[in-house]
Amino acid sequence: QLQLQESGPGLVKPSETLSVTCTVSGDSISSSSYYWGWIRQPPGKGLEWIVSVYYSGNTFYNASLKSRVIISVDTSKNQFSLRLSSVTAADTAVYYCARHPPWGPFYWGQGTLATVSS
Amino acid sequence: EIVMTQSPATLSVSPGERATLSCRASQSVSTNLAWYQQKPGQAPRLLIYGASTRATGFPARFSGSGSGTEFTLTISSLQSEDFAVYYCHQYNSWPLTFGGGTKVEIK
Image (cartoon, rainbow over all chains, first blue to last red; front, side, top):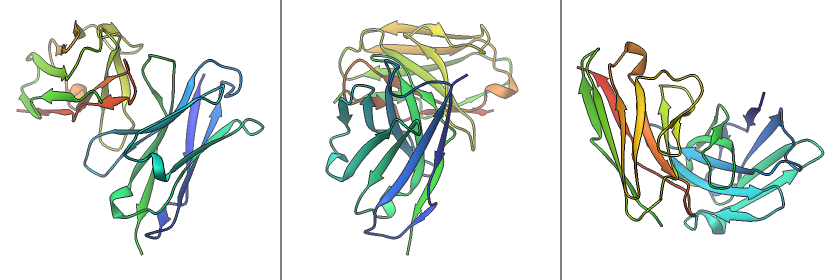
């Protein structure tokens, strides 16, 4: 059974880089024909897709965040990670990792809250 | 970018009544549309995909319809566990986008 588990520091200072990691079990990031992505949800607000990377490495970004986003994949640990630079309070959100097929819906992790505050 | 617009923002319904939620796309997404249910403190959970296929674990009182730009989620007889926020999501083209959500609350 597929499980996605996010982890992160919880608290990040303004202007610094937010890093969150998703550990995948029940599937292999490198061998399955899926996208692995990140979505966020500010407290009390809606959902915003951030980025998705295909198992082959092809990557798609939300244009509004692209300049600050790096997504990386560690196949040896079956993990993928999001780095969001130059954060502000507006980046405070629950960050969800997800798996989705090409032209298919998301399968979600449980999410991790990242708060930007000094 | 395809803009997804959900209405109403809040729907007040009595248990046992029917709820109808709408989702409109700014351009055609064919049937590449999903609905998610989100309860407080939980991750969204896939409810409907392909505009009308119910995901595993959801009862038949949930149904989805539509294609192109107009979609509907219907809950035929609301149960207490159905009060939640519902989001539509298009996966027809990049960037992937969501509607703003409809909160179904107890009347």
